[in-house]
Length: 347
Image (cartoon, rainbow, N blue to C red):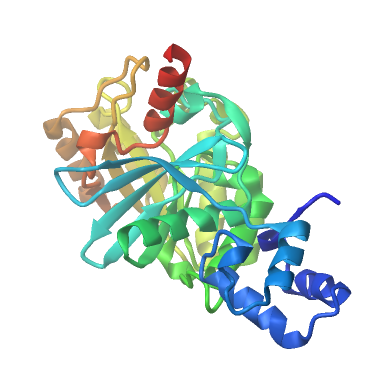
Protein backbone atom coordinates (compact mmCIF):
# COMPACT_ATOMS: atom_id res chain seq x y z
CA UNK A 1 0.00 0.00 0.00
CA UNK A 2 1.36 3.42 -0.99
CA UNK A 3 1.78 5.75 1.97
CA UNK A 4 -0.46 8.81 2.07
CA UNK A 5 0.32 12.36 3.12
CA UNK A 6 -1.51 12.60 6.46
CA UNK A 7 -1.42 16.40 6.48
CA UNK A 8 -3.07 16.63 3.08
CA UNK A 9 -6.24 15.04 4.46
CA UNK A 10 -9.31 16.89 5.61
CA UNK A 11 -10.51 16.07 9.12
CA UNK A 12 -13.35 13.82 7.84
CA UNK A 13 -10.88 11.92 5.64
CA UNK A 14 -8.48 11.38 8.54
CA UNK A 15 -11.33 10.28 10.82
CA UNK A 16 -12.43 7.75 8.21
CA UNK A 17 -8.92 6.28 7.99
CA UNK A 18 -8.65 6.03 11.77
CA UNK A 19 -12.08 4.39 11.94
CA UNK A 20 -10.72 1.70 9.61
CA UNK A 21 -8.08 1.01 12.25
CA UNK A 22 -10.80 0.70 14.91
CA UNK A 23 -9.43 3.58 16.96
CA UNK A 24 -11.50 5.46 19.57
CA UNK A 25 -12.37 9.11 18.90
CA UNK A 26 -9.89 10.53 21.39
CA UNK A 27 -6.98 9.11 19.35
CA UNK A 28 -7.99 11.41 16.48
CA UNK A 29 -7.66 14.43 18.78
CA UNK A 30 -4.26 13.25 20.01
CA UNK A 31 -2.94 12.78 16.48
CA UNK A 32 -4.23 16.18 15.31
CA UNK A 33 -2.63 17.81 18.36
CA UNK A 34 0.76 16.34 17.44
CA UNK A 35 0.41 17.32 13.78
CA UNK A 36 -0.42 20.88 14.80
CA UNK A 37 2.65 20.87 17.08
CA UNK A 38 4.80 20.29 14.00
CA UNK A 39 6.13 16.78 14.61
CA UNK A 40 8.06 15.31 11.69
CA UNK A 41 7.76 11.64 12.60
CA UNK A 42 5.13 9.41 14.22
CA UNK A 43 7.72 8.25 16.77
CA UNK A 44 7.46 11.73 18.33
CA UNK A 45 3.79 11.17 19.24
CA UNK A 46 4.81 9.89 22.65
CA UNK A 47 1.35 9.51 24.22
CA UNK A 48 0.33 7.00 21.52
CA UNK A 49 1.04 3.27 22.00
CA UNK A 50 4.13 2.06 20.14
CA UNK A 51 2.06 -0.36 18.05
CA UNK A 52 -0.21 2.46 16.90
CA UNK A 53 2.75 4.65 15.98
CA UNK A 54 4.08 1.80 13.85
CA UNK A 55 0.66 1.34 12.21
CA UNK A 56 0.49 5.01 11.36
CA UNK A 57 4.02 5.05 9.91
CA UNK A 58 3.12 2.09 7.67
CA UNK A 59 0.05 3.88 6.24
CA UNK A 60 1.06 7.55 6.25
CA UNK A 61 3.96 9.97 6.06
CA UNK A 62 4.32 13.46 7.52
CA UNK A 63 5.71 15.87 4.92
CA UNK A 64 8.39 18.14 6.28
CA UNK A 65 11.40 20.16 5.30
CA UNK A 66 15.03 19.94 6.34
CA UNK A 67 17.29 22.97 6.65
CA UNK A 68 19.87 22.25 3.93
CA UNK A 69 21.52 25.64 4.28
CA UNK A 70 21.08 28.78 6.29
CA UNK A 71 22.42 32.28 5.84
CA UNK A 72 22.17 34.85 8.65
CA UNK A 73 22.50 38.55 7.92
CA UNK A 74 25.11 40.55 9.80
CA UNK A 75 23.16 43.74 9.04
CA UNK A 76 19.85 42.75 10.68
CA UNK A 77 18.09 39.66 12.00
CA UNK A 78 17.09 38.35 8.57
CA UNK A 79 17.63 34.61 8.04
CA UNK A 80 17.48 32.92 4.64
CA UNK A 81 16.80 29.21 4.47
CA UNK A 82 17.32 26.67 1.74
CA UNK A 83 14.86 23.92 2.67
CA UNK A 84 15.20 20.39 1.30
CA UNK A 85 11.93 18.57 0.63
CA UNK A 86 11.36 14.84 0.95
CA UNK A 87 12.05 14.24 -2.74
CA UNK A 88 15.37 16.10 -2.57
CA UNK A 89 14.14 19.28 -4.28
CA UNK A 90 14.90 22.58 -2.58
CA UNK A 91 13.02 25.84 -1.98
CA UNK A 92 13.92 29.10 -0.29
CA UNK A 93 12.29 30.98 2.55
CA UNK A 94 13.22 34.21 4.31
CA UNK A 95 12.54 35.08 7.96
CA UNK A 96 12.44 38.80 8.76
CA UNK A 97 12.17 40.75 12.00
CA UNK A 98 9.93 43.81 12.21
CA UNK A 99 8.65 45.92 15.09
CA UNK A 100 5.32 44.09 14.90
CA UNK A 101 6.97 40.65 15.06
CA UNK A 102 8.45 37.98 12.81
CA UNK A 103 7.35 37.71 9.20
CA UNK A 104 8.22 34.86 6.86
CA UNK A 105 8.35 34.84 3.09
CA UNK A 106 7.32 31.40 1.80
CA UNK A 107 7.73 29.49 -1.45
CA UNK A 108 4.71 27.90 -3.13
CA UNK A 109 6.45 26.08 -6.01
CA UNK A 110 9.81 24.52 -6.81
CA UNK A 111 10.85 26.94 -9.53
CA UNK A 112 8.38 29.00 -11.56
CA UNK A 113 6.76 28.96 -15.03
CA UNK A 114 6.30 32.72 -15.38
CA UNK A 115 9.73 33.62 -16.80
CA UNK A 116 10.04 37.20 -15.49
CA UNK A 117 13.37 38.50 -16.77
CA UNK A 118 14.51 40.09 -13.49
CA UNK A 119 13.74 37.06 -11.29
CA UNK A 120 16.32 34.45 -10.25
CA UNK A 121 13.66 31.79 -9.63
CA UNK A 122 12.29 31.93 -13.17
CA UNK A 123 15.76 31.41 -14.64
CA UNK A 124 15.82 27.91 -13.14
CA UNK A 125 12.54 26.79 -14.75
CA UNK A 126 9.64 24.97 -13.11
CA UNK A 127 9.88 21.61 -11.28
CA UNK A 128 6.64 21.08 -9.34
CA UNK A 129 4.01 22.57 -7.05
CA UNK A 130 4.38 22.47 -3.28
CA UNK A 131 1.65 20.92 -1.15
CA UNK A 132 -0.13 22.93 1.53
CA UNK A 133 1.66 20.83 4.15
CA UNK A 134 5.06 21.71 2.66
CA UNK A 135 4.18 25.40 2.95
CA UNK A 136 3.17 24.97 6.60
CA UNK A 137 6.38 22.99 7.21
CA UNK A 138 8.49 26.01 6.17
CA UNK A 139 6.94 28.02 9.01
CA UNK A 140 7.32 25.23 11.54
CA UNK A 141 10.98 24.66 10.63
CA UNK A 142 11.86 28.36 10.98
CA UNK A 143 10.00 28.69 14.28
CA UNK A 144 11.77 25.64 15.69
CA UNK A 145 15.18 26.80 14.43
CA UNK A 146 14.95 30.31 15.90
CA UNK A 147 12.72 29.65 18.89
CA UNK A 148 10.25 32.30 17.77
CA UNK A 149 6.64 32.58 16.63
CA UNK A 150 5.92 33.74 13.10
CA UNK A 151 3.05 36.25 13.21
CA UNK A 152 2.67 37.09 9.52
CA UNK A 153 3.42 35.40 6.21
CA UNK A 154 4.11 36.59 2.70
CA UNK A 155 3.57 34.26 -0.26
CA UNK A 156 6.25 35.96 -2.29
CA UNK A 157 9.03 33.37 -2.39
CA UNK A 158 9.75 30.92 -5.18
CA UNK A 159 6.84 30.30 -7.53
CA UNK A 160 3.55 31.94 -8.54
CA UNK A 161 1.00 31.25 -5.76
CA UNK A 162 -2.06 31.52 -8.03
CA UNK A 163 -0.53 28.98 -10.42
CA UNK A 164 -0.81 26.51 -7.52
CA UNK A 165 -4.28 27.74 -6.59
CA UNK A 166 -5.85 24.70 -4.89
CA UNK A 167 -2.90 23.89 -2.62
CA UNK A 168 -2.39 27.56 -1.73
CA UNK A 169 -6.07 27.89 -0.82
CA UNK A 170 -5.80 24.76 1.32
CA UNK A 171 -2.70 26.24 2.98
CA UNK A 172 -4.61 29.42 3.79
CA UNK A 173 -7.35 27.42 5.50
CA UNK A 174 -4.77 25.31 7.41
CA UNK A 175 -3.06 28.51 8.49
CA UNK A 176 -6.15 29.63 10.42
CA UNK A 177 -6.75 26.35 12.27
CA UNK A 178 -6.65 26.44 16.07
CA UNK A 179 -3.72 24.57 17.55
CA UNK A 180 -1.53 24.99 14.46
CA UNK A 181 0.53 28.02 13.46
CA UNK A 182 -2.74 29.98 13.75
CA UNK A 183 -2.19 33.11 11.64
CA UNK A 184 -5.22 35.17 10.62
CA UNK A 185 -5.87 36.31 7.07
CA UNK A 186 -5.20 39.97 7.82
CA UNK A 187 -1.60 38.92 8.50
CA UNK A 188 -1.19 37.23 5.12
CA UNK A 189 0.01 38.79 1.88
CA UNK A 190 -0.31 36.86 -1.38
CA UNK A 191 1.73 38.01 -4.35
CA UNK A 192 0.85 37.36 -7.99
CA UNK A 193 2.38 38.38 -11.29
CA UNK A 194 -1.15 38.86 -12.62
CA UNK A 195 -3.07 35.66 -13.40
CA UNK A 196 -6.34 37.47 -14.00
CA UNK A 197 -8.62 34.42 -14.08
CA UNK A 198 -7.28 33.27 -10.70
CA UNK A 199 -7.61 36.75 -9.20
CA UNK A 200 -11.35 36.54 -9.93
CA UNK A 201 -11.47 33.06 -8.30
CA UNK A 202 -9.71 34.42 -5.23
CA UNK A 203 -12.05 37.41 -5.16
CA UNK A 204 -15.02 35.06 -4.77
CA UNK A 205 -13.40 33.55 -1.64
CA UNK A 206 -13.63 37.01 0.02
CA UNK A 207 -10.58 36.30 2.17
CA UNK A 208 -9.31 39.25 4.19
CA UNK A 209 -5.71 38.85 3.05
CA UNK A 210 -3.66 41.46 1.20
CA UNK A 211 -3.33 40.87 -2.52
CA UNK A 212 0.05 42.07 -3.78
CA UNK A 213 0.33 42.43 -7.55
CA UNK A 214 3.75 42.48 -9.21
CA UNK A 215 3.08 45.28 -11.68
CA UNK A 216 6.53 46.75 -12.40
CA UNK A 217 5.40 48.86 -15.37
CA UNK A 218 2.57 51.24 -16.29
CA UNK A 219 2.04 49.98 -19.85
CA UNK A 220 2.28 46.92 -22.09
CA UNK A 221 5.27 48.20 -24.05
CA UNK A 222 7.47 48.06 -20.95
CA UNK A 223 5.78 45.21 -19.05
CA UNK A 224 5.54 42.56 -21.77
CA UNK A 225 9.33 42.24 -22.32
CA UNK A 226 9.84 42.07 -18.55
CA UNK A 227 6.94 39.75 -17.74
CA UNK A 228 5.67 37.28 -20.39
CA UNK A 229 2.36 36.89 -18.49
CA UNK A 230 1.46 40.37 -19.72
CA UNK A 231 1.02 39.03 -23.26
CA UNK A 232 -1.99 37.04 -22.06
CA UNK A 233 -3.32 39.55 -19.54
CA UNK A 234 -2.29 43.12 -20.46
CA UNK A 235 -1.92 45.92 -17.93
CA UNK A 236 -5.40 47.42 -18.34
CA UNK A 237 -7.06 43.97 -18.06
CA UNK A 238 -5.06 43.26 -14.89
CA UNK A 239 -5.86 46.65 -13.34
CA UNK A 240 -9.58 46.18 -14.01
CA UNK A 241 -9.47 42.81 -12.19
CA UNK A 242 -7.65 44.48 -9.29
CA UNK A 243 -10.21 47.30 -9.14
CA UNK A 244 -13.06 44.78 -8.94
CA UNK A 245 -11.17 42.70 -6.37
CA UNK A 246 -10.74 45.74 -4.10
CA UNK A 247 -14.37 46.77 -4.47
CA UNK A 248 -15.64 43.25 -3.71
CA UNK A 249 -13.38 42.45 -0.76
CA UNK A 250 -12.92 45.93 0.69
CA UNK A 251 -9.16 45.24 0.80
CA UNK A 252 -6.74 47.57 -0.92
CA UNK A 253 -4.37 46.21 -3.53
CA UNK A 254 -0.63 46.49 -2.94
CA UNK A 255 1.22 47.02 -6.22
CA UNK A 256 4.83 45.87 -6.20
CA UNK A 257 7.02 47.98 -8.47
CA UNK A 258 10.69 46.99 -8.87
CA UNK A 259 12.67 50.07 -9.86
CA UNK A 260 14.92 49.12 -12.79
CA UNK A 261 17.43 51.67 -13.97
CA UNK A 262 16.53 53.12 -17.36
CA UNK A 263 13.63 50.73 -17.92
CA UNK A 264 10.57 51.67 -15.84
CA UNK A 265 11.77 54.46 -13.53
CA UNK A 266 11.20 57.66 -15.55
CA UNK A 267 8.99 60.55 -14.48
CA UNK A 268 6.79 59.74 -17.49
CA UNK A 269 6.26 56.22 -16.13
CA UNK A 270 5.35 57.64 -12.73
CA UNK A 271 2.75 60.03 -14.20
CA UNK A 272 1.26 57.27 -16.38
CA UNK A 273 1.06 54.90 -13.41
CA UNK A 274 -0.58 57.56 -11.24
CA UNK A 275 -3.19 58.20 -13.93
CA UNK A 276 -4.11 54.53 -14.17
CA UNK A 277 -4.36 53.99 -10.41
CA UNK A 278 -6.13 57.24 -9.51
CA UNK A 279 -9.41 56.66 -7.66
CA UNK A 280 -8.70 53.02 -6.82
CA UNK A 281 -8.08 51.44 -3.41
CA UNK A 282 -4.36 50.82 -3.62
CA UNK A 283 -0.83 51.28 -2.34
CA UNK A 284 2.38 51.25 -4.39
CA UNK A 285 5.44 49.57 -2.94
CA UNK A 286 8.59 50.79 -4.72
CA UNK A 287 11.37 48.20 -4.54
CA UNK A 288 15.00 48.86 -5.44
CA UNK A 289 15.77 45.97 -7.80
CA UNK A 290 17.78 43.13 -6.29
CA UNK A 291 20.56 42.46 -8.83
CA UNK A 292 20.45 38.94 -10.29
CA UNK A 293 23.49 37.40 -12.01
CA UNK A 294 22.89 37.18 -15.75
CA UNK A 295 19.91 39.55 -15.91
CA UNK A 296 21.92 42.60 -17.01
CA UNK A 297 19.59 44.85 -15.01
CA UNK A 298 20.51 47.34 -12.25
CA UNK A 299 18.54 49.09 -9.54
CA UNK A 300 17.50 52.72 -9.94
CA UNK A 301 19.46 55.23 -7.88
CA UNK A 302 17.90 56.63 -4.70
CA UNK A 303 17.33 60.09 -6.25
CA UNK A 304 15.37 58.54 -9.15
CA UNK A 305 13.27 56.41 -6.76
CA UNK A 306 12.47 59.44 -4.61
CA UNK A 307 11.40 61.46 -7.66
CA UNK A 308 9.11 58.60 -8.76
CA UNK A 309 7.63 58.38 -5.26
CA UNK A 310 7.03 62.14 -5.06
CA UNK A 311 5.10 62.15 -8.34
CA UNK A 312 2.83 59.34 -7.13
CA UNK A 313 2.29 60.97 -3.74
CA UNK A 314 1.45 64.38 -5.23
CA UNK A 315 -1.04 62.60 -7.52
CA UNK A 316 -2.85 61.18 -4.50
CA UNK A 317 -1.37 57.65 -4.67
CA UNK A 318 0.06 56.22 -1.44
CA UNK A 319 3.60 55.09 -2.21
CA UNK A 320 6.41 53.83 -0.01
CA UNK A 321 9.93 52.55 -0.63
CA UNK A 322 10.52 49.04 0.68
CA UNK A 323 13.21 48.74 3.35
CA UNK A 324 15.96 46.38 2.17
CA UNK A 325 16.53 43.45 4.53
CA UNK A 326 19.22 40.80 4.29
CA UNK A 327 21.11 42.58 1.50
CA UNK A 328 24.33 40.82 2.46
CA UNK A 329 22.81 37.33 2.09
CA UNK A 330 21.01 37.65 -1.29
CA UNK A 331 17.64 37.62 0.48
CA UNK A 332 15.61 37.87 -2.72
CA UNK A 333 14.30 34.40 -3.55
CA UNK A 334 15.86 32.11 -6.11
CA UNK A 335 19.48 33.15 -5.74
CA UNK A 336 20.51 30.74 -2.98
CA UNK A 337 18.98 27.76 -4.79
CA UNK A 338 20.77 28.74 -8.02
CA UNK A 339 24.07 28.95 -6.14
CA UNK A 340 23.54 25.55 -4.52
CA UNK A 341 22.63 23.99 -7.88
CA UNK A 342 25.78 25.41 -9.50
CA UNK A 343 27.90 24.03 -6.66
CA UNK A 344 26.31 20.58 -7.17
CA UNK A 345 27.09 20.72 -10.89
CA UNK A 346 30.68 21.74 -10.26
CA UNK A 347 31.12 19.23 -7.44
